[in-house]
Image (cartoon, rainbow, N blue to C red; front, side, top):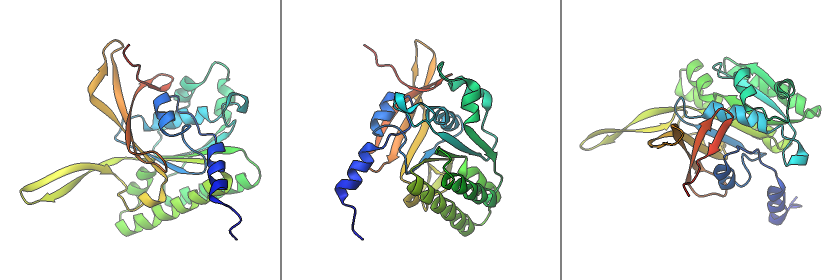
Length: 263
């Protein structure tokens, strides 16, 4: 007991290599990208880049260690058929082959809460057997919870169990866990009437179970006039060391990238 000091933990955290997003500003704000050993939630409306980023991370986690990557495999739990091998191929670097990249993505389609837990149990066995899985993706966690469980208390219980099991895998094996969450409109009672706000679809009861939350959305007031590209914003709403900050990015065929600053 008490064999580990805070200094040991700090050094261990500093030595961890994150999974690069290839949006330099976002990677810098997060320290070194999406961290290992933690759960990161990507939250946002449809078309905000959640699945795009998940697919990009599935490729980036395979970058060789000699180039500063993790050289790992991916477990991709797809709940709403958002995964596309063709889109993954668009993320592939010239130094990789498409067959190698796709072969390192362990894919399964899950349709309910029980299937998710079964998949996590299988992943645990694979990790104990030495499988080099460095990233676990559930896209979308909110879809499978909200569309298969009707009672609020049951939703909270199931969500808590899933996140607890994911925490164990992240902590025990040091893999990064990324989940996606949709948004919904919540009415706010006011004396002069009712106002609404956009909130995470799974509510706030599970916020203490995730280590990071990045809210993605389109920046309606900005666009890249030169390239006629929409601009997006990543709001780091919760992070273990970074204060709340917004990062602008754009979505290209090869993934998300930083917005070029005007000279």
